[in-house]
Amino acid sequence: MIPRLSLLLVAGLGVAAFHAASLPLPWLLGPIFACLGAAFLGVPMKGVKPLNDAMRTILGVAVGATLTPAILGTIPAMWPTLAMVPVMVLAIGLLGVPFFRRVCGYDPVTAYYAAMPGGLQDMLVFGEEAGANVRTLSLIHATRVAVIVVALPFLLSWVWGASLDRPPGAPAATLPWSEMAIMAFAAIAGWKGAQALGMFGASILGPLILTAALTITGVIQHRPPVEAIWAAQFFIGMTVGAKYAGITWAEVRRDLVAGLGFCALLVVLTLAVVELVYTTGLAPGMEAVLAFAPGGQAELVVLALIVGADTAFVVAHHVLRIFVVILGAPVAVRWLK
Image (cartoon, rainbow, N blue to C red; front, side, top):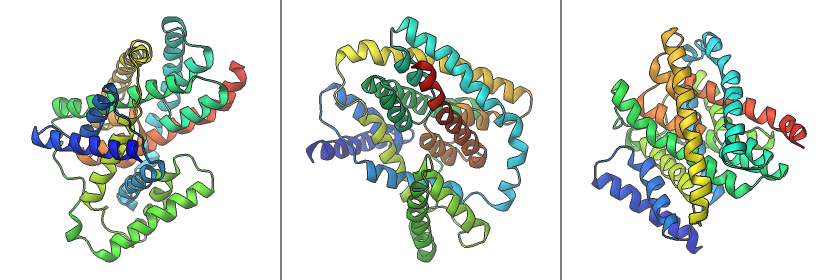
């Protein structure tokens, strides 16, 4: 109980500090930085997975509520950039696996799962089953997600002038209570239904699909209230930061430095792909960055909502990326063994 309370307290202090300093995205970045600092000080922290997953359902509902018939009609036009996603995943593997093997000295299985840009939880589960070093994977992927989530807001603001203070929704007091009740139902029913079907990313994709259906039929006409999306940001930031709990200086020298080096490779590759997409007119620059940045699906959905990007475009590319990585995992395990 104490590690969980410590995590909530540290994350809350991070939000307060970011608000006091007028720093961007206090509900997301505040918990990440506060938890990272607390981890180095040895503060015991532990997340609550069911609660974290419940908060992720809010993002699924928020995205599903934006998928109107007009937006869905644009999806077939995405095929040129969607076709680039498997190519980019392959390029990341070709760069990442040799980096972790030859430069960092990891074993083949750990190197493979450290390099794959899938969901953090998915890579830990698959990696553990394959015999990888789970603690190393946890630190590498937490670093990947944290670096991208921290760097992207500043890039979006600097290059495209995106407003990071834009409310991601309307206040709860202005929305119909009946519709918010339907959203809550869509969140829980979509999550549990997708979970029962064994769908990957069930906590986001299940609510997204059910909410999209309700939006298309006119049952839902608003996005979740801003307070709910702030809560989702808070728990996502807290979850990322908590992955560093118990980190030692030996792990900092080995795994954290390795993760930062890998992030540098990812940044160069991502910018090259984004430049290609933008110069060929396949997508606007901001949407291209959010769609191809190999961060966490939930974190990048949050950013897309805040800056007002095309969430359908962003989600479609991240779902395909995670699908490609997960689909390739069993094949990779057989080959590595």
